[in-house]
Amino acid sequence: MDRIVNEIKSIKRVSAILITKGIRYISYDINQEETRITVQLPEFGRPKRSDEIVASNANFINGFKVVKTVNGEYAYVREADNSLLPFRFDVAFDFNEYGYAMVGKDGTVSWINKEFKHLNRKGKMVEEQPGKTWTKDDGWQGIGAFSKGVKPLSMLYDGRGRFGTIAYYEIEGRLKEFYEYDGEEVSSYPYTHFSSGTEFDEDGYASANGYLLSENGILLSPETIIEKAMKKGLIGDIIEEAKRNLNGVGRTLQNQPLHPQSIS
Image (cartoon, rainbow, N blue to C red; front, side):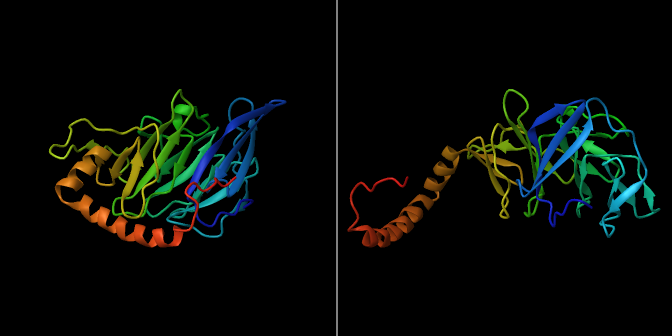
């Protein structure tokens, strides 16, 4: 294969699609620009499909092997019957332990499952049509690997509309719903999309739109966190810890100027 990626952590379509002399040039960044893959496609439609394999991964991973055909497309061979499947992509990677693989096609990226359904922008798994060109509604601009918490979640990103959109995808095959907790009651209205956000850490937390998200679906505002911490006496513990640290910092900085210059 002409790409070497040891561990797939993320895939993102580079914003610009260049069209020159009837050829579309589309670039995908893998693992936050660690690797960039640029493909050439017809200005309209997909390349004429070929079943001639010119390169292949060495081993089957979770039931499938990624291969490359003579026209530059990526495909999968199924281990159960050693058959080349008809689905074609610009870039494609191994299936993970949850039964999903990252792919890119026509300038959009998505998760596919082992039934070769892909995740569209509405959060639905839809049938993949061999030879069909993807539109922006057929996928996302960027997706990340599933988190390492108890409830793994993948961060999805799309900035091709008026506002950026971030959502989180569950291994059960749906967008994660988050419910706000105000310290007394949990709201009945679910949040699934945000304008900004981070990936979930190993402890099962992320932030989005200024809120704290828990992998179990709870959304907390900073005000709620502070109020609950004050009621439980945690603020005092935090202040005492900060004072202890400040004493150490104060001793090391006591001879420093009152207004240190900024680092240019």
